[in-house]
Amino acid sequence: MSLRSLVTICLTALLTGCQASSQWDGSLEHLLQSQPERFATVMQDPAKYRLQIIYTQIDRDADNKPSFTSYTYRLNPNEYFYPASTVKLPTALLALEKLNELNIPGLDRDTTMLTGAVTEMQTPVIADPSSPTGLPSIGHYIRKILLVSDNDAFNRLYEFIGQEPLNESLHRKGYDHTQIFHRLSVARDAKENQITNPVKFVAGETVIYEQEAQYSQHNYALADPVLLGSGEMIDDQLVTGPKDFSANNKFALQDLHDVVKALIFPQSVDEEHRFNLTADDYRFVYENMSAYPGESGIAEYADPAEYPPGYVKFFMYAGSAARIPDNIRIFNKVGDAYGFLTDSAYIVDFKNNVEFLLAATLFTNDNGTFNDDHYEYDEIGLPFFRDLGLTIYEIELKRDRNNRPDLSKFELDRQGTSD
Image (cartoon, rainbow, N blue to C red; front, side, top):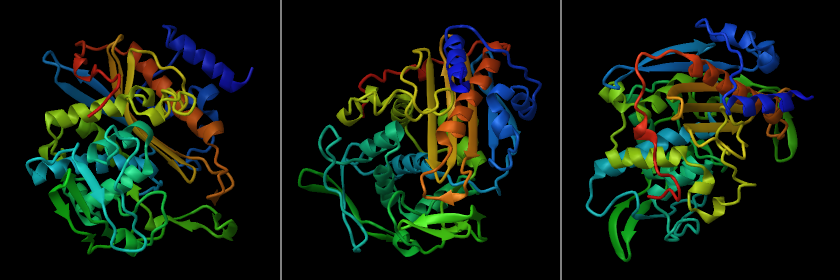
């Protein structure tokens, strides 16, 4: 029997009430070493895989107020990993925050947003066939980000916020090991990423708000070279030598974890770390963050073969599960590119009154070559994330709690989730 088959059987048994054995002494290192059937490959050389983990236990008092106890493994804000799509989460939150701070009558997340262009490298947007109205909006871009991690949707929010305001806002909130300064999935040089498109919000022929192109005055590239790997495929040619990631986005795992915590538990973090969101904003984000593509009502995401429930759920479901039990919901954001896999999540089991926060990043690129599409996602990375989520879940199922948590805030109606 293959390891993958064995793990699949264990997963099925676990989620129907049969818990696998997990020993927890407060050490993530000991926990991973104690289960070689799950973690032996990575734990043979965790530095090679650039593994980092944060696990946060949540306990509630009699008034349901949460307290947090965190455990970490190899956590290091200076050990670079490419954050890929995880940067979309704070960008989405800042887009909502900007709308609230503009505070213009008639301007909200459902207002049609038209994107223009001022350079040859910029592209305009005047329609979105996946939207219920056929028109683009902040809200629909956020839905696409949270449901299927759409790259163009992120780019449009990046352009709406502007490079400099985006970064300065995150730094003011205390996310000091974060720099988000380039679009995704399109080739743009540093200067092009500093210039963001003009946008305007309209209701029919009426312009509600118009924003000219923004020009960032700062260079957010990392100060020192970040050299990884041994080569990169560029225009179908192998360029030997390490790739320098200093011109790429950075989002330290602690910052990512803290953004998720600030989103899920805003009253439990200092005010300066919070995002300026309304109660309805939080509901909207929670619904779409935990919804499955097929629940969205978006026709493009209706095919479960292309977009299964586990599509962007790495922990416990390896990004591909065809079914997730009704009692479990995962509020998360994942990223994968260049061999890096990252997930940060708040995981809830309503039936068993379980909740916890978990974040991890892993690097799987054995041949050291970037952009060759030869990464060990399926062989090593995604099974590791699945098993890490299951292992922590097993601990949580057995962990004593003085007070039963009231999780009703997160039991949302996601069928046909919409704005």
